Image (cartoon, rainbow, N blue to C red; front, side, top):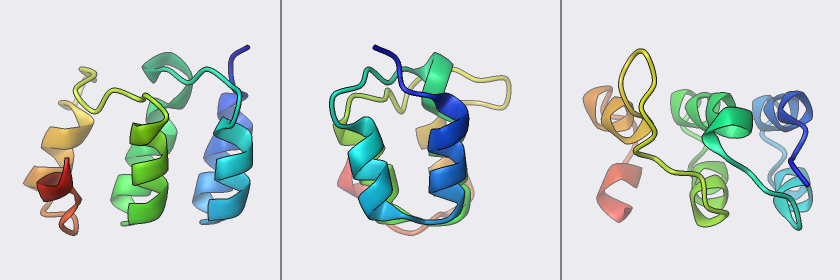
Length: 85
């Protein structure tokens, strides 16, 4: 079953790590339904949430119109997460 992308994004925006864990547990996440949440977590520098999304299987190399999430993370010099991948 796919995760509700709007609920996930709202939860990421509130930086609710525990709720993100609950939401991704047992659900399928993919770039189609969760990439915006990953971008939001990168932009807000929510390292723990970025890690959760990536470890849940979200591809950081998924190509978007403005590049790929990992590339964006490195380009904008967002925290040190890119070194940990």
